Image (cartoon, rainbow, N blue to C red):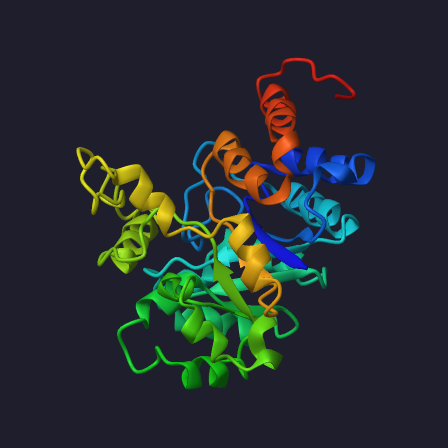
Length: 307
């Protein structure tokens, strides 16, 4: 079973409502071995958030935070809070908004946290020891050229983390993946998609720039946009696609080899999340219909009850 870690529990909540209802009423539309098991993201305006932006919505009040957590708990879905801003400092752990989110999360066993900096990780472990902690793609990207970037260290780190997102350079490295003992494979998240190519030398720098903007230390002037492949390169789109893992690849190797935890990137807008998810969840013959249902809902056009 491919247990997808999907983006944006906040801005795409209505989309997930549609998908969950479709899964119940039209299961034949979905690939037989897929599941939306984990949804990651953060509430808008939280300086702890990393990896993506969510500035188009007002900050959530305490009741709204509880409502979201309760809704996903009823759906039997795990939420991962992306507290992964790599630019955080010691004083940032006392942010009132972030602590309100953590306090609410501590009441739900289905909520986990992704971390990338030691100060916030230490604070969460001390103040909220019941919350499971995962090592994020930002943390493993930062470590990718150090002694931490080896199989032995990753397995050792599983003593301290619930799950670890592997650096994207390993996503298609079957030699490395096959060397992971089978009993550990379902504790490593495999990144299937990302806006940046595997060979980009600025991966961590992009995350830093997003972090500075997220914590209001810098305005968005496009610094975090990846331009490693020039726009006039005729193979640009092919090169960006070639580093991704398709459903067919996941089905042919990863599912059979016990790599069940598959991360799909795509935070940003409702439309972008829909475009990212459908190819991984829906059989080809139904994809156009599901796109229409998701996008017509977003544009407030009446959606047919059946198709």
